[in-house]
Length: 425
Image (tube, rainbow, N blue to C red; front, side, top):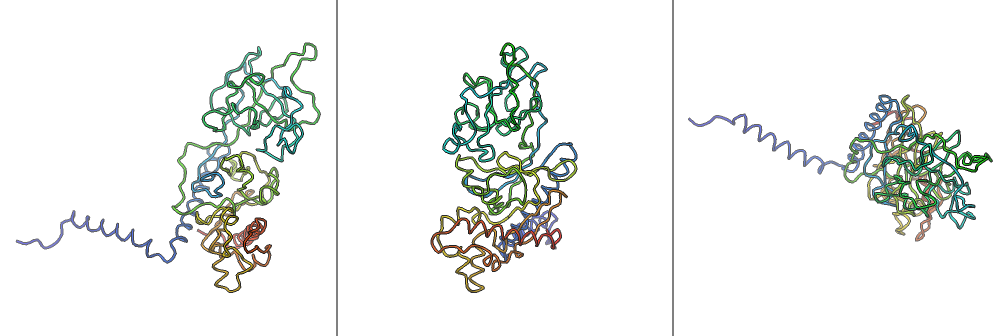
């Protein structure tokens, strides 16, 4: 007798094939695939922020999320990752100590030699620490013998506290042997040559004319002291969150409002998260946003330096190919010229070229004091008003200051939209 229908297994196979076909066709038929991807990414970021906030409350230490440029100078990040602040380090044994004295090559100050007489030819933290005294902090035992340290203990940017004095570990160009493992940033003082053996070079942050802690007034012998190292946030063990293919966090358009401890806006494009100046050393820019256990944002770290007192954080999520100011600065095409867009169609064409104006882009606005965040579509950004309030672009020579003014103005519109839009998905 012939069969009257399909078996259950055959029916399941057919359903599976149809499901696969439909799942592949729907994105192609979607009227705006880019907008869908960006919307999906912002939802994922909100989930990541929520999990970081919850983890900070669980462990009782700051925990957050971070972004690193996909390549140095790209101005975009294509993944996000969890970061956490390790416990303070007070030595490998009860006998661990440090000695502190002036850098032997004194007078030696922090900063680029061309700008600072006696500078050490570096500008990692420039200009915040330019002209500051450099000290040598050596890791020893109580008997003044070298104190071996475990690997991956601390990094450039960490702060050593000794009897109320605070010393910022800096990247001294003369002492590249500080770095091991291909420039990971973790330090290996034991690899340092005399007279810096088992020592790191630091900026004395709170130097107000105090006497050095180094020498016994009678014998002149270096005196060992207990210490504590406040360490920077580092990547947590959680796997990174991969943004949807083709979508990026535009670190050029993203940035903070308010805050202290930022680098000079003259070289860092008015509190944006990307700067060609900072990338002169070929190291990708990194941004970290840290929640306190109480739920608020503790600090925003830019390239290892904390920016405190921030009133708002704006993250711009858009297309990879539209990210980074270098796209504007190296392309003289008129599509970037807001001043030449006369008709509504021309203005829309201009908007589609950069993430801070593109209607499909989205912003994630974070209020640090409250620890709250919401997303807003970029259609709150009025390109015509941005044009009216920005410095006009030249036709073949795009002025970076004009682009920066556009970014700041676009953020203002997005911020106002976030304030009135609630917590969009």
